[in-house]
Image (tube, rainbow, N blue to C red):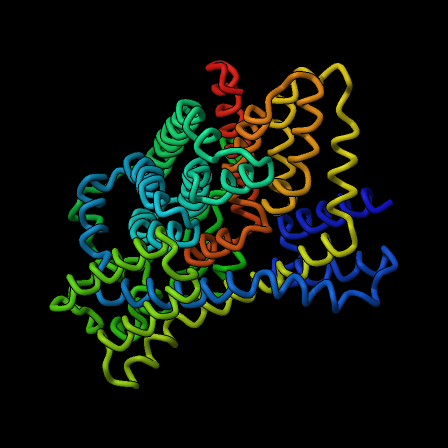
Amino acid sequence: MLTILGFAMIATFLVLIMMKKMSPIAALVLIPALFCVFVGKGAHLGDYVIDGVSSLAPTAAMLMFAIVYFGVMIDVGLFDPIVRAILKFCKADPMRVVVGTALLAAIVSLDGDGSTTFMITVSAMYPLYKRLKMSLVVMTGVAAMANGVMNTLPWGGPTARAATALKVDATDIFVPMIPALAVGLVAVVVLAYVLGLRERRRVGTLTLDEALVREPETETVLVGAGAGAHAVSGGSGARSGAARGAAGGSGEAADGDAGTDGASDDGFQGLDPNRPTLRPRLYWFNALLTVALLTAMIMELLPIPVLFLLGAALALTVNFPHIPDQKARIAAHADNVLNVSGMVFAAAVFTGVLTGTGMVDHMANWLVDTIPDGMGPQMGLVTGLLSLPLTYFMSNDGFYFGVLPVLAEAGQAHGVSTLEIARASIVGQPLHMSSPLVPAVYVLVGMAKVEFGDHTRFVVKWAVLTSLVILAAGILFGII
């Protein structure tokens, strides 16, 4: 019964948000609460929610201060040279812009943190997509898939979890998988090229000078693919209406004070050389501070939430020594902070109920039990295929610590090594990064002003394809 209710709860959530019948925050809270009552454990709902919130509180804190930090860096002009360099490289060609998005997300993903990757990638690429009137879901989809492939780095999380759960060396999992993962990354770049060609046919190309000309903007989000695609548009001044249209508004900066809201409100404000928040004399300080922050994060000198808290405080103090200016910067990014942190705490309700009621365990056991005995010698392939839905519908912790040991034990009984099972378990990460249970994806869609349902509809099929390419490459190369 718990198995059926678990799948029903997840399906209900996905259907409602993709049909835009409920907002993600409302769905993440109300649907699990309702199913908790159905299970007969409504009296324990408070305990489940508190447990979920406690586990995700550090993540929420990290995201809050990371958004403030990178928001300030955008305001003071740290990423302006990157935006200009990418624009010159892309030559205002939509195809090059999409490919550039994939490459930038992959490079920044070397830090091992999805939230940081999405903040930097969107900060750099969002102005280009807005000015060229390109599909914002193409940006979020490509960035999520590139980050998903790179998320398999030993310090990225999944590989370390698999190594810990199966008591093997993370290097023995990751290094042999490098050829297959490289094929997966190439697949993302090729997909970006194809999507970019489609965008080029849809919106055409501009010269560099034309792209830099400021003009009234129209939001455009392409939903779906191929012949069935359709555009949803909204005016640049109507934030709420555009949000309902899946693009999100660019705010009132086109008609208002360009310096007040900084880069967060105008799609192309990141290239405005005259905004008063710029701090050119402090450029190298800000650059070194960012490098030091990312280095400390990779070396795990302090917990990530603490690092971003200290970084945000230092960045605000040095760049905006006057308290009114600091308050203005915090207020300018309050929307993103509230949306993302609120989504994380709402997701805590969902994960808390799934775990606390035992739905996750029953769903995992059911899936494992349905594997035919004849598939035993192919447990590497089975594990790879199961990693797609399981890492999408449950957290990495739930999959790697709850399901993977069972799969590994079944594989050993049929002569499949633990390392092969471990390697196969990480192929679903391109899809996992767009899971509604991954806090970082809310940073991505929030900063890009894209509806989560639109992002989901667009990215799932391509992310599944990328994961299957990695799995096929792993089998072809004899790694899995």
